[in-house]
Length: 149
Ligand code: FES
Image 1 (tube, rainbow, N blue to C red):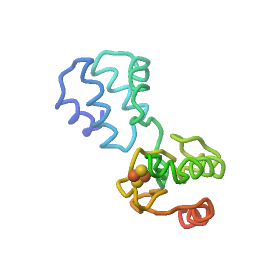
Image 2 (image 1 turned 60 degrees about the horizontal axis):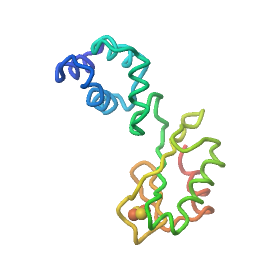
Image 3 (image 1 turned 30 degrees about the vertical axis):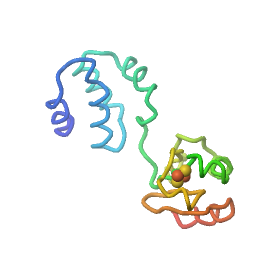
């Protein structure tokens, strides 16, 4: 078992109700929850892998596949929604060929929606990795994607 996982387990008691904080820590450590991690957690907490997937499916925060090289977050908070955030998200889903919450098959992009990025006056806003892009349009966004390989 990887040392990092052991370190996480040491922080928690061996009880099924510790599943969510353990999943959170594993995702923080590795960026996602790999099949081996699920296996280790299953053994440690003595619950089945199916139970782990079942419980975690209620939480949008958990990812079980390797993240893409770039993360795109489309803001759909009220201000951004009113100013066309949903249109930007639809365009990205079409252009990248994935749905919100998925990763492109070439692992280039992850696509997510967020509630508010905290700069509503500049809406609609899209975040790619650490960069925030304001007053986005479908055309600007399409051009922007080319900068991210
Ligand atoms: S609603 Fe999009 S930044 Fe606040």
